[in-house]
Length: 361
Length: 263
Image 1 (cartoon, chains in turn green, orange):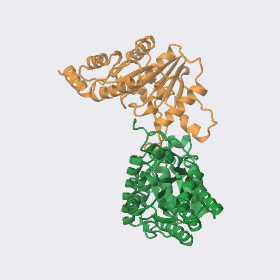
Image 2: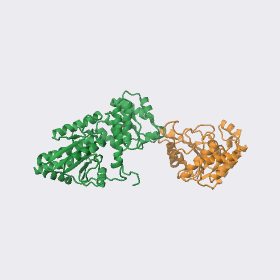
Image 3: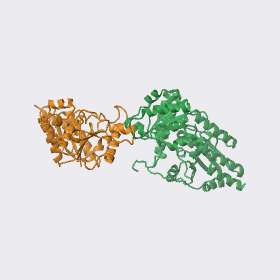
Image 4: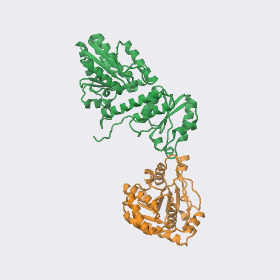
């Protein structure tokens, strides 16, 4: 392996934008070309964050675009009346040395503005998240301890990706894994034979709205056809920024309603790198005939290759298959659908399990 | 069409040498272009009778569909100043890339004989190397004095040229009247694998002409100084030796100069 990671992956700009969303900013101003980050902008708009761009052009590269940013901030204040704004740098603006602080000062608007001076070449994507949190804590938007906790978690996340995740291999291609039928059949058969199925959710923030459906579906199936179920999840409702806690509360509410009893809480929804390690400890202590791991499953060390894995990332599926896992299921549309979610979504694997159990019952 | 790029340390007299070479070529009947690449945009002033040209980038900024009004100076020399951002903002290098691409696409006619690019300072980034990219100047000359810092800058430029695989036509010594200057520049040039192609003496007449907003060629055509510029222009035009230079180690360069300039 050359050390060059060739497949596309998120960058610090995107991570900064998501982190600003986590801090409940009203508007994100992208200081750069109009197209920069537009796919992620659409998703963030589904999550209720407004995104605007300064739309830099060739002349702005040459002469600088500070005035454009000042004007854009003025327009945002006038038309959107935000109380909290994030400004994110891009390759274009940061390489020519645009001064975000000065532009914000010149704009002199009422809203609080968090400047995040990162760009696509600033390092791993988590650099953008760490920088956004750092500036926010300096401005008193979030407590300093929260910044320290998240920075540690993000450093762990970076290591995790390099060691076992998306950047651990130089070329990963989208792979959609085994069919939902194959995975559902194994789960169904185990329960039908009176076996014990252990489901672990190691969720990452809003994506847990999707993955939690597997827990629900397995429980529903077991209630119809028998077997025993165990559940582990990182759904601590007292960890993280208010938005992240809200996700954990929403999901817990729906799981309680579906009669899913979580035996072990492994951490908060932004703690997946460490929660995975805790999950592994619990897994070794709970007798089971089949293990299903959902979410960021490479954060769970020493998983048996016999486990069923559920991922929302088709490249991650490729990674897991290359690691020797066989029954890896992809739920790629989770990403797009969770952005405006306030309750657990239905997944294809979940629905397949339900359908199978209904037919049998 | 000959395309020539002039590099050298800031303040060493690149623009004076470039403008006088351009004027000499025009005087000899060649259709010449002077392209100033310094954001300060003042290199063409002596060719334009002391008038400062509006810059290419400023005009395009106001309206991209604008057509730049190329300056017509002494003996019909076409003058263009690229211009650029104010100091401390934006990206001058990007400006040069954009302006020179447009110059080639929309302005330079095939009937130009010589295009001379006056490029500021060192080759600090990709933009400043645009004048010597493929399709632009194939000939590079470096203006230098015999002083260490000036030759040090020349050495750095040679490193850039080596990196880009571009041939050096020679060093032009613009004298500052320091000891053993001609020998020093000649020797360093040879160590680069090149040669000193011209020596321009230091003379009060240069200042007088600049104060009058004219080149020496125009304002003091009969002076010896004008003769030196004419000879330089002739030697540059007849030059056919272009070697990719081999730069020296900075310590080696300093030791060499110590030896050469010891009285």
